[in-house]
Length: 428
Image (cartoon, rainbow, N blue to C red):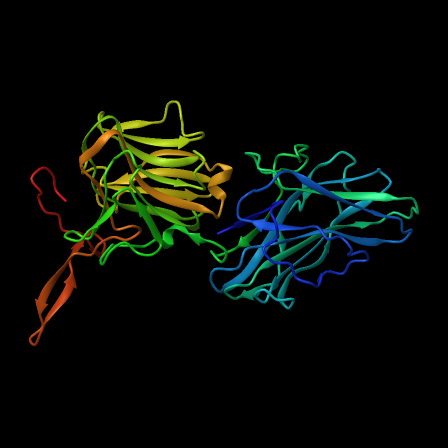
């Protein structure tokens, strides 16, 4: 799973004292957060050199949030940043050094990329540039609390003694990541991507596993009379004017991952604008994807909203059996909305090219309901997030009753299947 970071202009969470790369001039004090989503206004740093010999000049350092779990960071790294040189005679190329700190200390846990020197000269008009192909890194065993540090600068290969300035751009929250040759360096953010992030710095959404067996776990925040249904071990949320909801508010990412669950029931009652929704998005700014059930119309909508709105999203008539399970899925640059009657056979309801913001490692999930007037008579109920319940029977072994899973022959193998029961209106 690739892990993308962005060069933000937000404050660095921690700044190591020592600059680990080999720099002729390391006086630059520019630092920033190597964030899991773009942040901050666009900024730039420029440093001059006057040496007649090859000179390595540091422009800035970007430091990541702490690692959330231990693992090995390996594979390759690629990056794209806005950069420029003051004249065509400056002969400046990228210089980069990347390593992992041992927690919040000045000690390097290990070096990922040692004093990389590029071959492409900076342009005189600022534009995106970086690695034309991914570059192999040296594997580093990362511990919880460790941080990535990226040191970026330039190597001046000219023989001039007149002042030559190399510049680097960072920050910006444009809707498109910076690309090679892109001159929108004041809006489109620069980035660094590791091929083998392995969920070290934010959790894949597939890790949100909960059967709600004993209540609502500490990973969730709930409000608006959302409650744990102790009789059925589910989460219930009315559609009301408080936007009743349940939110997993830690940083998650969907890239190469899934997020699925069981819609046990959807609400009835309410008036005017009434809906329940399952949402995935980076923040409360109206940018999200969601499954939206519109109560008065009985329709299920598959939305990709910007500014809380999408003009004509795909819609189907809701079927409590056919649409009992929902799934968000991202794979190889495509994002999917899917439904299933049994969490085994999935139907794609919509797919799009994965937008930039769905690559963020700061996503959160919501179960949410809203009603203009009053509350729905029957709340929505959701269960079995990223897990499929196993129905068991008890078998007498000769000395004790032992729980065994129910299995059926698929034609090639015995596979575990759920057992359904009739609940007055549908099989569940």
